[in-house]
Amino acid sequence: MNWKICCALAFFLITFSSSVSAQYAVEKIDPSLLENANAVIRLDSTIWEVRGRERARMTRKLVITILEEEGLAKADIFLHHDSFRRIRNIQGSLYDAQGNKIRDLNSDEFEDTHIAGGVSVYADARVKKTDLYMNRYPFTVVYEYTINESVLFPNRTWMPVSRTKTSLERAILAYIVPQEFSFRYKSDNHLSLDPEITPSGRRDKQYRWELNDLRAFVHEANMPPAAYIFPFVQTAPNDFTYGGYSGSMKSWDDFGKWINDLNRDKQELSDETIADIKRIKESTTDTLELIRKIYEYMQSRTRYVSIQLGVGGFEPDDVSSVERNSYGDCKALANFTLALLDVVGIKSYYTLIYSGQRFQEVDPEFPYQYFNHAIICVPLQNDTLWLETTSNILPMGYIGQSNSDRWVLLVTENGGTLARTPSVNPLENSVNQRILLNTDSDFHVSGNLNRKFSGLALGNRLGVSLLSESRQRDIINNQIRLNNFQLYTFDYSEDKTPPGSIEKRMMFGINNYFRRAGQRFIFQPVLLQNTVAVPGSGGERNYDFHTSFYRSYNDTIVWTLPEGFQFSQLPDNFESETPFGHYSIRYNYVGENRELEVVRKFYGRRGHFRPDQWNDYLSFLREVRSRDRTQLMMIPE
Image (cartoon, rainbow, N blue to C red; front, top):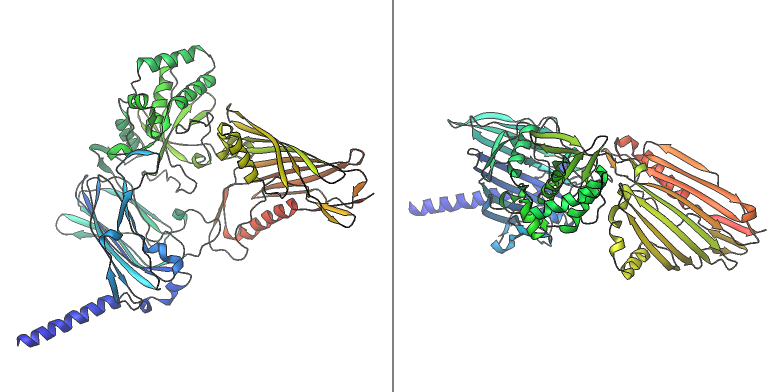
């Protein structure tokens, strides 16, 4: 009898093990989910158990099959944790294409490192991650882990698929919460992503979202950010406690009040600093000039570091800490600048913003923690000034493309209110250049260039005047891709008067720029201008596309040509105006002076466009590129 029981038990265990493994066999994946995919998420189950305003537990199981080497990076996990979030019971296993278990992951395959970069001096934010390598495909990896949280903060986004070429069999999100617990949620990019709400035990209820059989998204050039494409759910509790600070996210006003509580009583400057600011006030009666001098005072005495310690991810250091250490993170430096302006009676607002190129636009109707940065807003009588406080070299009012044209939260003494940073107008952010070129009888070219960058076009050129001469020369030579180019002299000058500008002047020579064909000489009159890039290819498109132009280019190029030659033919002048931008080029030849003047103007428009406009967009860019590459021919007179 015992023998029979043992055999039956062994048979059951073998059968059970085989059936569990078999579920991960690649052959069980629906063929439609393999199309355009290099990875398939077999299961992504995330269960949150909420126990009040300061305690929650998340249990997750993730099963993903990697079909080919291109998708290998999708086998890795990146789990953020800190003093409020503790990872428990993490484990992983690998399975082959038939669903047979290869092995369990070792504990040392889960690397635990600081998440902060080199500018950070205080941080408890860490990431636990894997970096798997496999040489046989396909394979499947299974992860299971638990995260215990001692905080419930309004910042949850569930997006089981967030990358192209990834399909999904099944994903589940569930919240098990007390009956009296209230929270908000929203979903997008899927027609049927509403929760199923059911009782859970005697005192709880469960909210459950599920996604099934989601085919892979094909990658396309200029795709919008993920939040505009992939299905997602965002959740946010109405009331929360973070690091001992209780708050509410029922409205933007409430969230601003919570930030105000974190910032309270942190603006008391030393007598010495107050005296410095009062002396600055005595030096000018112009408000804008006074703000500029105070802004530059702040820049000259501080540097940026990242502080992510405990509630420090949201709470700024006291201004006395900035004075004492001469450094601070974005929150501390913004708070310090606010205190400096307050000394002279200039009203300003601590401002939360998401800084970055690809971001999810704030939904004014859904208060949520969208932000990752702090700046300063200074409302003036006829305008609003925005101050980026983390750089020592930015001109006053320059906040860069990564902070432009988006919703921000102004933290006022009465609470929070939404505002918007200035939109990007390419005509106000320009690169203007004039190039004078002289060609001698041997067709050697000598040139004189003057180029001025204004507004957002300053980009990463800020601070170049502070570099050594040899480093500046290297930068110029690396940017200019012309054969036989020789740089003779150059210099830079900066003007920090808003919106700020940098001017570059240089003298140079070019050998063998003209291509000889018998008695004829061929050359491209438009030079020292970056060729317009044409992304992707034409054809049918599935998704909307974004354009991110933010500069205008105005070029005047004057060629003085050698005696005894004339043009075989000059191109017609050309102008194009489209929804995507403007381009024009004009040729004017004055024979008695042997001067050819080429005037070129180009700017693109930022925007969100429909898929059926893609080919028109490419045609516009190709036309610009083709016109820029126009070749002219000179022949003997």
